[in-house]
Image (cartoon, rainbow, N blue to C red; front, side, top):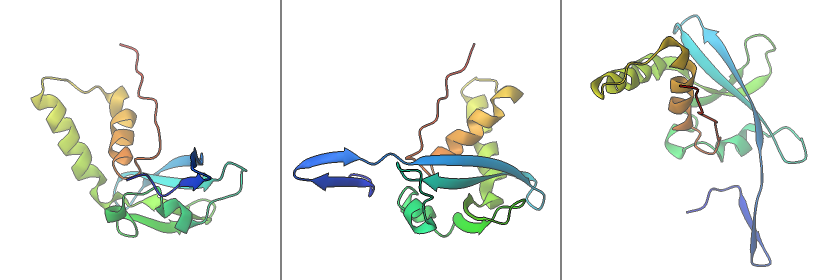
Length: 131
């Protein structure tokens, strides 16, 4: 099944490119990073939260992913709720250790974004790292 943001016109499919500003703010209550998304259409028009839901795995929409005011601006944004971040991050790091890989502190952001990509799989991240 193709993602909801694909359109068909005259038998030709065109991919609509959406751009997201991804902001990470520290959540004091959960003591973990919290990801906030603000999206734009190809024309630069801000996406409505309902349009962003199209890019979120359905099982997470309106549960793990919510619309809340961004802490510093109070602008409503889609947010990946942090209640499970610590548990999932620990599970990911434990799996790396079991595989004999020793995660370094400088890899924390990459590990966090890989976790987020499971919730919003339509966002492409560049995980290239220098070794």
